[in-house]
Image (cartoon, rainbow, N blue to C red; front, side, top):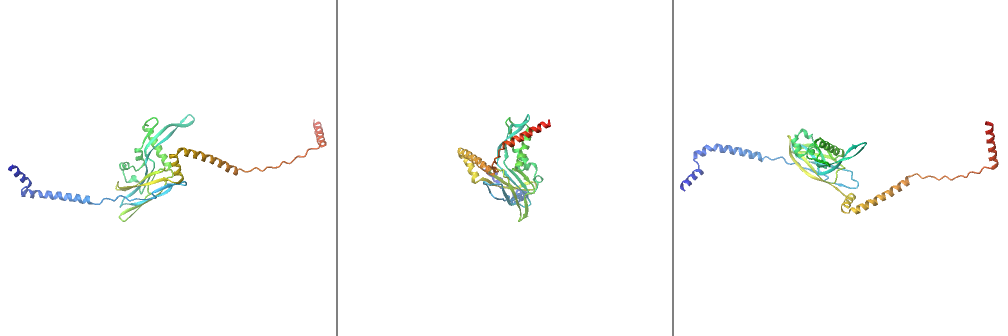
Length: 312
């Protein structure tokens, strides 16, 4: 028992020479750890700030789109990209095909996983800053959107060639509708106050459905995303359109009856307007023709017969 305690004491209190020989190593390790602590203590880039105007877009009876402004501050020396992204939803499309001399629906295509809206605005071309892997990770262009998209037909999974045709047609359709758009050099940036002040203003697409949309801001520098933030933009129906939607969802029979009444009244209204615009016909009074006298009629007949005889 005593031997064990002695050895334990020796292990806990090494000789003075041993402590002196190990001192430079401990000093070097302390210096290394101190340097690492200083590096970790350096402040990281603050995430971008974002201000949205308006935060809610109201779709009333005379809704015709809106103007949206996004602005804020990003870390110094960075480029800025703003993305407006809608929620992913499933959509069904008809594929047209020619059968003989006519075009008919030959297939149904189901597409899911793609955002209902994708708008991208940036201060520079994103592809000149970020590599393909980073773009795909954050979903920053249409190609990355296609990678997340899944498509199937009424006959099952499409082959590679058919799938590529579906994806390209889907992206082109969304671009024509204005719900997929990307514009470089649209975000205005200015250095000042140790940060980059950015702003972008754009027209909200009229075809976007009601719902919540994510407005995302990315700060880009030296080939990487150094900060990001997001907020929500809401698109809501108000007034008569909102009342009709609620009526159709909660009381469908009332909605149907109201639709029939509105159609009948519209028909009568159009007929009344057309009758008023139609030019009126003016009635011309008939003038009585006097009857010919019998003597004159007989004389004219005799003259006609004599002429007939002479000619023959």
